Length: 217
Image 1: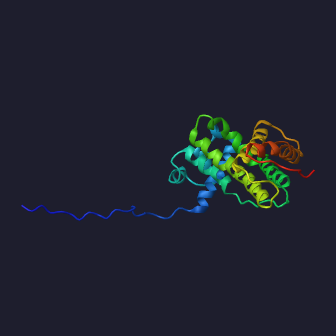
Image 2 (image 1 turned 135 degrees about the vertical axis):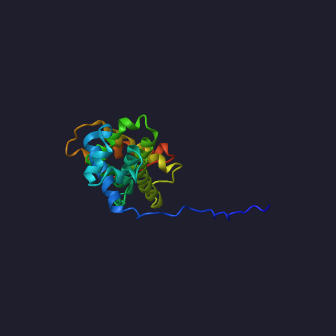
Image 3 (image 1 turned 45 degrees about the vertical axis):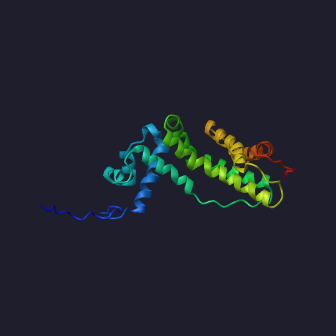
């Protein structure tokens, strides 16, 4: 007896059903997440509070993110997408001061509040910790590395063995200062940027395999 067979369906992605996701609604939910997070901290954040602030149902939220953790990680990633204009002071010390000053200024606002809200949870949540590094630290390391490469290109300093290390050495104190200082004087941004750039830059360059000459006063 001949057994009938049904032709197999070709492999490939399953067809999408329903309406495409609304990017504006996604952004509204992520903005609402950051707002609630800054106000209530990670422990006080609920998906119901986020959905209410964004003006949608919790069902709409859960169709996009399956958990509170996934939602917070996606919201933190927004900071990694911010546009950036490289400084052009003409000197490595000057460029570095601008980068650090801009980061310091940002840390006195919502980004600083968000990091403080997440830092305790990130200590025992690997996925959240990685999201914070990606959103807040790696962009800063990259900006420092960029101004260092520009200094090498114009002959201000010799080539370095490890350009990325400069960012880690110089940027770490900025983040530590603003995470541990609860209240900041209005002029601390420029003062802190200048102090870190002038004192740590020579050490950072030596650690990365190079040297630095005279800096602007």
